[in-house]
Length: 220
Image (cartoon, rainbow, N blue to C red; front, side, top):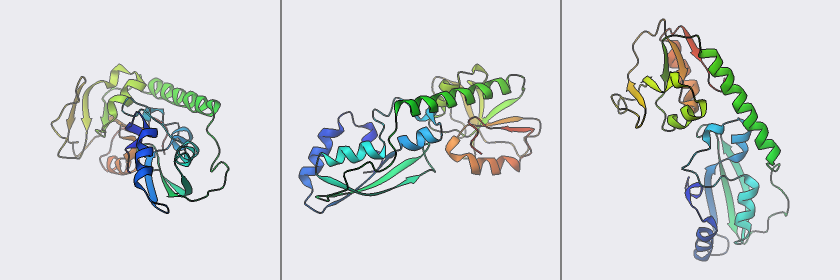
């Protein structure tokens, strides 16, 4: 299962059906957004309406345990959606009865939220005096990031993107139009707005000679 369970209102019902279909010894692999990496990287921009559940390694392990699946191992993928986790469970496997990784506490999440707000406030104060500010990276969840930033300066104008299938389109409910970047961005202040593609976009922008490149969440 790949990026499904975060969208399911009743994962217990779904897991019961999966368990009924699986024989003893069956392997089950699942990938979902990781609450651990979300907190670690302060990616509160990844909390949005399309996800009705957020899972940690421990909560997912406990969930599968109810239906006879034992934890085998897991890994994190930091390259998409602020970090995802891939877990391996086996039906009938007796896993050690202990926490797999450190438990995510309410205070840890509040700390991550506080760090996120501090960073976005720094960003908004930084660009107040900048003219000719443009976004680079027409990400799918850009409207969510803009909502979190709450900066009217960014809610209209141009979003640069090299993907030809996006060029010429417009974000619904925003006055943001997607355009191919010019060959020279001299004099422009560029905000990298596709956060999960920060590194390749940064390298691309450098070759276009912008006046400055602005990092929203200090992802360097």
